[in-house]
Image (cartoon, rainbow, N blue to C red):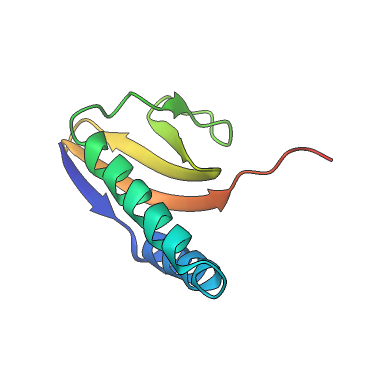
Length: 93
């Protein structure tokens, strides 16, 4: 499968990396690398991640990496994975 990454996702990821790099440049590099590696692996295993809790759709999944959720849609008809969401996981208060 081919992986497409939305501009919105790229912007949110870059904003988070820029925030982290202020205090911990090494941690920011490791996080970005882990996220990009995880996304790259989706091409081979698109249904490895759990179904998203935010959508009532089996094709929308969420990959969790270091406390961040990467939301994506598996589009079987076009043989694509579209990565579109990036949020920080939070515990309920």
